[in-house]
Image (cartoon, rainbow, N blue to C red):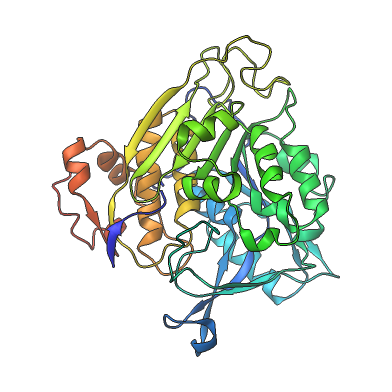
Length: 401
């Protein structure tokens, strides 16, 4: 299957964490908070009813981002709860093996670790015109250990010294107490880190809770950086196009709109007063007032667009998480927004060319060279399995800069 990437990742390893301009130094670059599960991948395409066997892997939007960022050389912590069971043992060990700090993962002796089964297609958003091969995903996570997280359970030490806190809307859908966690963490307080929020609208998780879309919109308004797919915004909020989404989300300083196979548009107001990127201009990091609040006219956006890459897709699941990791890596490095988007596309291309949720990132020198290509050369790139290790012809001469 060959098509442009439909979600859009970044720099590879360089032997250590980096500290980009604008973000304060801290003991941890990124904290990712949310549920991870053991996932069972099908041995062949088809309906779940027809798949004869499954391979065990790990999956979870926040832990996916954590693993990719750690592999890219950043200091990352994953905060969650898992059961005191074999699946919990596996999750903690597998995520730690990617270089992620798992020291703040609680073990619950009374609740199980979540698991899920999926087919090889894409997750449905509930939007009109959904592809007929949209994935079946069956979760066994009700009453899971992670669903019992409370605003007190992460503990202040888990977030101490972090530069970026990454959250997703999936956590909010797990339980009322998990929603309370996200409401607490997206509250604008003077001492909070940059808050990144991926909407990750999952129709099935919000069944029976019609307030889900409104809840996600409210949480997104409390973040500094928001990731949302154009299809998600249409399905959840009946909003179409980056400008319409921005009108509903004026507060985040950086709004990242993923536009499927076309590319990504970012509407952003960069800090110019020493506050971290993603903070409203003129406001200190984590100020109580949302971006633009208290002013007659909000600061004008800069609109930045970068087209997607052409990718020989193996599986689509995990590409959106990889894109978020790439964009955040570029943010930590202080890269221009255009470069952050391109690094996001490259991380997504790595995820799209492997069967599971996670893929090793391209080495940082390779990612930087590809991200710096002229528009024509970028457009001629075609990436397939093995491209991150040099085993695949990228169909374009990469300049050795």
